[in-house]
Image 1 (cartoon, rainbow, N blue to C red):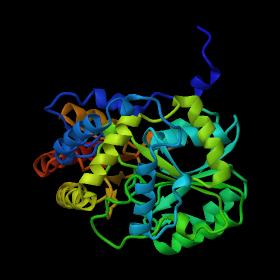
Image 2: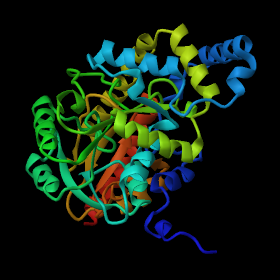
Image 3: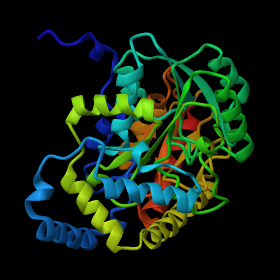
Amino acid sequence: MRYSPRLATVKRSYIREILKATQDPAIISFAGGLPSPDHFPSQAFAEAAHAVLTENGAAVLQYSITEGYPPLREYIARRYADTLGLDVPMEQILITTGSQQGLDLMAKVFLDPGDGVLMERPGYLGAIQAFSLFGAAFDTVDLGPTGVDLAQLEAGLAKKPKLFYAVPNFQNPSGCTYDEPTRREVARLLAGSDTVLVEDNPYGELRFSGTPLPPLRAFAQGACTVLLGSFSKIASPGMRVGWLVADPDLMHKLVTAKQASDLHTSIFTQRVLHRFLTDNDLDAHIAVIRKAYGERCQCMLQAIRASFPEEVRYTEPEGGMFLWVQLPEGLSSERLFQKAIARKVAFVPGHPFYVDGTANSLRLNFSNSTPERIEEGIHRLAECLKELLATR
């Protein structure tokens, strides 16, 4: 077979491979980036699907426009205005097949082999995959409790990368959030460059403590920005409905790229989702998710404080679905994973989240486990850590 050379530089998703090892129901898994199915509004979606099919018939089973169902785009535009005070015209919103497709479209529109992409360190694995497929040359900026290292960002932008990819709210994998001074300075630095900001915000509405902050786009006057959003974390990941916000000139090119990819995101799914949003109180639904995730996060943090060795460091997120654990030097998260899986607990070792590799960190997901399983899983993981430290 004469495969494209581009596949040679892209690895299969490490997380997807790990998830195959967690199919045993006896395994307590902190590995997947999974929302809790306990809070999927199944009955409401069933009613929405029935109403859409009954009232619209064949129209929802036909081809549709690439940009997306206009009432759904109008809903997103109104929500930006109501919740964030952002003026986003409906015409600047493109419905995508999950926000992951937004990353793919940005790569198709901007990247040729060797083009620069600036990433957070650690960074979202899905973005690393999407950009790698088009031959991106990565540079990274370290991420800390208040956001990216600004001196490193300034130095990285001086190299004129085409894209800077950032997840300012409850970042995947670290759980870190940019504070307001960092957001303002990031926006200032970007305004003085021709690098496009790709701002991914899948977790922004999952804040369960602290003060909400505007997106980078709100501060980035004079910079070219693309803002990605998703219904996966607040409604259903299986619906695969996301969106991106872009200025008109760029939108034209993104629409062309999407037409070549899939013509349009499922119009039936878009119509069902819009009916669900119209007939139900999304804010009340999100409030339930926030409460549950906040309780699960605190449960995990309390269990870590009580049982992890003191040398281990970890983030304390104010929202989202993940926290990040930094092991002492010389301790391998890969070795820890092998011990942990033998005790039927799983997590994601940190190295897939680095374009240059590292072995002593790991990601824990708290959204998809009950408090009881969190406590037991962290206890098992702590025992594995202590065993590794004893042999160091």
